[in-house]
Image 1 (cartoon, rainbow over the protein chains, first blue to last red):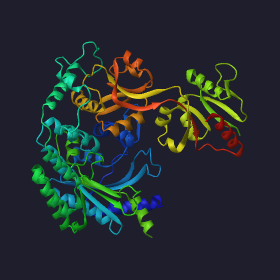
Image 2 (cartoon, rainbow over the protein chains, first blue to last red; image 1 turned 135 degrees about the vertical axis):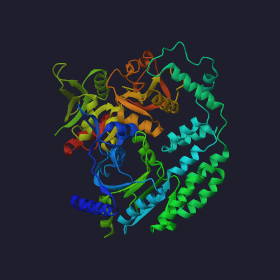
Image 3 (cartoon, one colour; image 1 turned 90 degrees about the horizontal axis):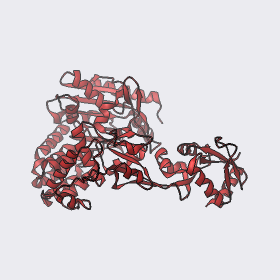
Image 4 (tube, chains in turn purple, brown; image 1 turned 90 degrees about the vertical axis):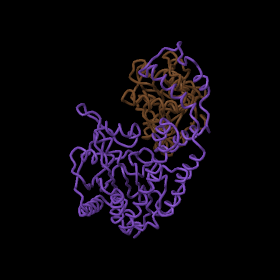
Length: 362
Length: 229
């Protein structure tokens, strides 16, 4: 196992390389206010991050990643365009697998740039690939933006689309919703009689709690509207399913997705962006003919990525988490920007895992 | 070295545990006054009784400070994330039965399932500007259950007692708690979600997989388990 000073030396070396590529070094605090993280990720973050507190500042979390503080810092006083690099510990609670580290070093590179998003995607991917050169790794890529475009363009109500979008990152719940909106799954027992009732609220049950009668009535109205909405068409469903199953090398994936776009024309602009990205990657010397693309990739990770996503995995070591991951998170800058927004993409590498793989290879 | 048996130190759980062992020819009793937490074991040699709060028994088993312990399945699963590796279930004792469930106000006629809860949580967050609060003391079990079910836009708030009252007091919108008859829920105008059963619990005898045993203790353990199983 690599020791701490070896890991730190490797991290420092990689950060210098990112600096040489034009990035400014940043060093966000280890303790992050818990509200922002909770607001973004909800209760799930508590299972992943260490929470601590004091009477003065309330709940704080030990930095579970760098992206969030870097975005916050950039949105409050960053120049434009900007490139940042950092290296330091992140902390992740581990409750199930004692072999997974709960503290490790990440080295990252983040680009905030309005011009040429395809170029910025390719820049981040190829700079990370360069740092990882020579290691027996397999890269996987995906694009959350294609799935988002497919859902937003469905011929159904905004309410249904919003419900699907909300669960884009929870594949099982997404599936349940899709089945229901396609009329394949009946509602719970007694639902019809509730919706048919003239006065669905039961006057014999006392109204308690902060959720008021008006909110219950509003939901019943929404359920009634939904019952009268025609199901999502088989055409669109098959299109979505085919899309989610696309798993090919990049050029072939694009070809297959162009076929899906016959049924789901709304994804065409996203596919044009994918095509531009492939060209930019190629221009930077990435062998796209052998680079995997999975349309469903990145759906179960932290939910801030909304475009290009990628990860590097150790061949022959399925027990290891990804060695490097990254992606585009334009929406996150909007959420944290108080009205401002900027396209952003970045990625992180774990030097400890790199060294471990190098040891394996020797 | 004696074999250490951990038993809840109070109330019905203690009495019924004593009764369960009695039926198998082993008499457990509190020595001295009712206030003293020391105990005595008759009917088998080499076993010492440790009286503990039921909530602390999982931790003591996981640390190997007791060899055997009686406590609820709910507490073991909540407090020991890797309980299969840390303890072995010897026997369910048939009392202390309770279900860990999710309950909402009965007046939420539009909410019967987790699916409904999720939809209500999304709308609630938009209307009120904060997540739908679920009061519980079973944070890990509830969070894992809801994550698995794909429920979002909720937050857990800690409630160590009188959890059923939190909705009426508007410190939570729903609860996740243990119930045996459902009477307290009904009295507080709450109802259980049809798919809201998280776990069925009862008092259970556990063996620590990590507690150290010398040959003599090991022999006592085997002799005891032979009579209990």
